[in-house]
Image 1 (cartoon, rainbow, N blue to C red):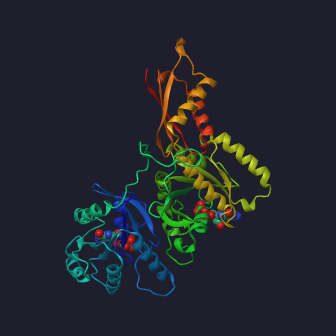
Image 2 (image 1 turned 45 degrees about the horizontal axis):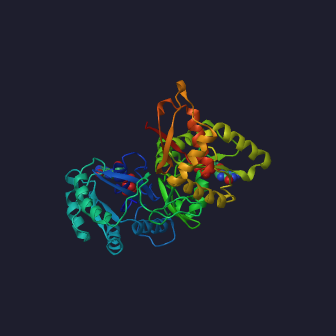
Image 3 (image 1 turned 135 degrees about the horizontal axis):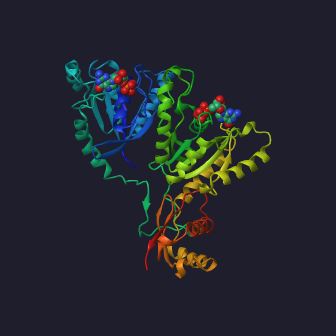
Length: 463
Ligand code: GDP
Ligand code: GDP
């Protein structure tokens, strides 16, 4: 779990601009109008050799009523509580405003590590504002120009010691786990247990699918209205990169790839963002939910994203949405399963769940399927069991003997998880036909109960 930095400050000071610079891809939406960015959005930031998670927050507004601004403020407070470090941003050209002062007060009370940044700091128009920033009582301000990339070195030198100190108390979470020799618990099936899902290490789920498949509706249903801030108020954006929530008992971080088509003004920007957003979501996710529209399932775009998820080594769950409007459910389900097997053989055995994001039907089953997939993806088979299994497989179907020389498979071990990856030591690996690999992979899938997850098999030469 990497450390989290929340960028907070009133609207229009340049938070999204800095977020974009840190995340390195144009994922957050920047707009000239105040308050366009209202969700908590996360991205993986890079600054020199520092890596951390950055949250771009709603503008901190001095409002206590239950209006949108009140909700935004609560969201921001939640972000501050969630974050390890807060970067409080003011606009150096405007100078310190009463709103800045109120929120500086909140941050002093609420956050252990606050970094103060005076943005729009390029040029002499910002000089007075930078000096004024000292009056906030949050230490020396960093003079930044998020737009022009100035002051990033200063930001680095402020952040580095804090991250250094904090990360000593946190364990890093690599996307792929190399299997070590450490003793771990076996579960009731004789497999090593998956790492627990906790608040500090929420399950990372991406919801992907064609426009209109119902992604927004589904995520809304899962996270609850408060988080997504959909509604009739003007200026709501839906380009969230990720949202934290607890679904059932499970802490999750959900990557939302839904575009914001609802706001015509920024339509074009978002269309451009949505493709790379989808790819990125898949890369970050542990489990990918491919959401299909029951009326038009398995279109090219659906197949492409499902295939991409497999190639990226993610665990996949297929969810067929809008099941509430299907009449011939039995018949339809049969067709769906048949198409699935034919069109996505690489995802053999992945769960296919019918849901209605609108009514909420099937969401419990979807939740359970996601957890099961996560389990399979983390599955690790003890070496002794694997080698017993290999002997059986070899007896049942001896490997081929190209040019009269039989390929010998000697020994097998699981080299990694997430997804499961196996190494087989053998003679002449280059001569092994693909069909024998498939025989082994399908056997592993079946005999060790690993449906859905990609399985990697590598042959290594050993004579
Ligand atoms: P947010 O509401 O705090 O997320 O602010 P934005 O990132 O959307 O920025 C608001 C406006 O300030 C946009 O027009 C940005 O182009 C502009 N802006 C951001 N950073 C800078 C900067 O360093 N210098 C100047 N001059 N303008 C900036
Ligand atoms: P996105 O583009 O994937 O985010 O799709 P949206 O969530 O915006 O949904 C597209 C349309 O499908 C909207 O009109 C939704 O109301 C509708 N929709 C979403 N889920 C369901 C569902 O389960 N049943 C029905 N009947 N309609 C749905």
